[in-house]
Length: 499
Image (cartoon, rainbow, N blue to C red):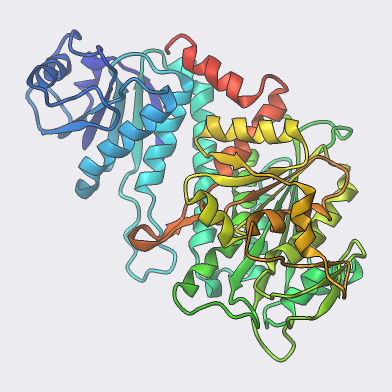
């Protein structure tokens, strides 16, 4: 999909030929504008057909004096600029999606701040995304070109470049998240990672079973031993800053299919366990965006990837395994496998002397119960890191919520047969899982994002969301800029002069 910036007011936008023209209308804006669009906005407001509430919209077909076949007037309301833009764009898309528009012009009735433009781009891409990989008669996304009409196109170039890179990263993550387990094996996921090394400053190394055994990653190997598919350990590097600059390390859980192992999952909705590698997919998506934007930051991506399957060699409840750190783990539940592969990857991360380590995982159903599908769960050992991630999530509209890490939550992980058990009781399950990981996180500031509720949607809208690529990318760009936290910058963007 091609995004283009144009310097357009309402009068000029009326002359743009398109399958659909979306006008994002701010309170009090537009009706005084000269020309056909100003007249339409004024008439709609006078009739009460266009309330000043975000997401309220009105569609017209071939109105007089306008070149576009369809016009959607969509109210922004008076909320935060980025949130309002997202709501207005999503509502407008619902009005025109059945027409399968190929060229859409999107214009603001007044000014637009960069954050709102980015939100509009991401929302339109998200709403129009179509998965085709395993369909015999694929009907790909019809939308080919989006023209963004703003008062000064030159002022929005940087914001658009960031938004487009984020879209491509999100869609890379969605693509691999959506692929079924037989089209996304650990080997295939490793090849996807290798493809990212075509970008400048990106390198990829893939370790197989022999190399992982040499590293003594006993917990990771134990999860993989019940599958015919060989494990892979993916190491991605993006070198955007000096060699002396400590990297940010991202660790993504890559279970390409999770049966639960011997602790077998229920049959209902087990197909959705193809999404258990969405943490890994988000790391790949971030590197896709980094390769395009080339920011001044060093990033390492670590992805332990395997299947959690059953055969005669499969891990059993009660087995004790030895992790790369040397700590022994009693496996009380083989369906708590994500933390087993992550603990070895976290131990491996220490060799990079990282500035911070963030792991991303579809880790616990308990986090879904706690936060639903709105916010990801955030756990952190460092207040600064937690604040930076939370602020980045707010700025990217990819929100998270900080959860506690009190030492008392680790009591349930004690066992008589190993250094630690891999599960505690049901109470506080997302927290006890994070406490397990914390044991292996090393000395660097560490955070854990539990994305079990946000990585994919079920039901009629079933599919990967690409989250939290937006959050992670914004966090890394803020580190590259070395300036104020994302929340303060986002606030400045929202208050700044309209473009």
